[in-house]
Length: 395
Image (cartoon, rainbow, N blue to C red; front, side, top):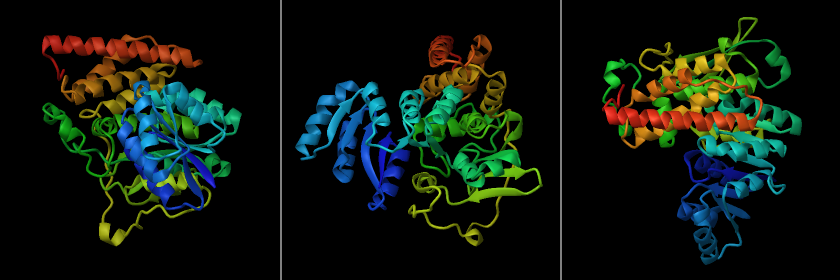
């Protein structure tokens, strides 16, 4: 029996993980459920899955969670705060951790799970972008197994099952749907609204990740992730826009052959791989009928209309704390966009301003990276305020 802690249980990835877990009561058990602020949704999940532990990140929600669990007649223990979540991620009662807390907030619990030697189903991309060297070192030292849950990295994971396959690797090609604005020019993106940006054509995701997909920052972060996960430099990682989202990524070998992983765009496939690897279990996702779907198209990304991808490559090339600055500035800019405070095109402008205006320290300690993250957030918030004051919300 694999005992699972789902961090970010009320989000889209957490919901998909719990769906897969519920399909296999003989081998998977939801032991711990963690949410951010939504106490009612967390209690509802506890009624269904009856975990031993439930935690809310917002400490002010503790009493409501504790009382709600009691009122539901559940023996589930209530916890609150990030320190408690870190402890649960490392707890010996869990052998598997789904790391799906969005943003830099998920870093500490992800590191805690890695240091405890867990099987880590990694959906929190910021952990690798912000502190990839530290996370991978922690996993190696503790014997943790990292299975990436992003569909693209999961595809590469499946195509590179062992060290021998890695030895013959030439290039990695990450696929991108292109988001809701594929084919638009930069000028056509001036008046994009948050509602339009979160309406992803293929994937059901949270608002922040959906906006990242719309700007192609999501793909830029994935380039940095792939560098850490598979030990490949950015010069050997390409991005292909593939609007059908059926080919999830490809790898090219030195002998000229290529392998790709295909499937319907549903996160449950990657999660099922993570739970059972190297075995295979049912995910609830139907097989792919290529005759029904027909053609598969590929095209290069438009870096003029979507410069966030270019900025991510630049941050990876600079190294050190530059990816942490990229990630923090992007989080602040996306948050401001979703609040209607800035325009869509201000997102890459703010990220570039932060990258160019800040010095970049070595990525040799978590404190240094967190300092860079905090400084980048302050810098970007100040820049947002200036833009709003000047009325230049899309510049």
